[in-house]
Image 1 (tube, rainbow, N blue to C red):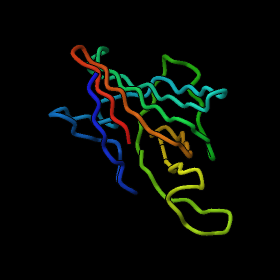
Image 2 (cartoon, helix red, strand yellow):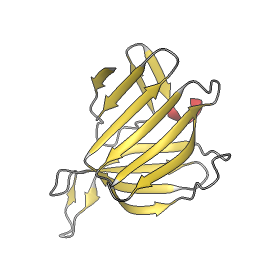
Image 3 (cartoon, rainbow, N blue to C red):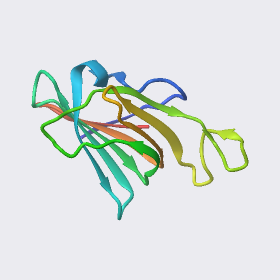
Amino acid sequence: MKSIYIKSPLFEPILDLEIVNQYIDLHNDFDCKKITQLSESNQLYFYFQSITSKQNQIIVFFDNAQITKSKYSITDTSKSVTISNFQRGKFQSKNNKIIEENKTKQKYYYIDFSEGQQIELFAQRLEMKILNNKELLVVSG
């Protein structure tokens, strides 16, 4: 397994990435097939599948995730949704300060889908696992 660390810059879209000569466009080339939350471990998974090849899949994983706002419902895995916004951002703290991380060093993420679903969350770590017919590439940020 090959691991490459990339930093997710503040307010920069995480929709398209170029990693080791591999271009990934979550908005145009992939559909989100399923969202799973493991409440006992505070893990949140987004499962994406290529619209051209079922062999190409991406799993976006948030560790120690705390959802602060949600408007989503993906219960039927035969229906997919298209991600339209995915970025790390700032949030307003309880004392009305705009900050990047909370006290436990969790970062804040915004995720929107073209069909209207929205999720905002804190997470300790973000990983993207890119699965295709040749390799597994893990990207953390």
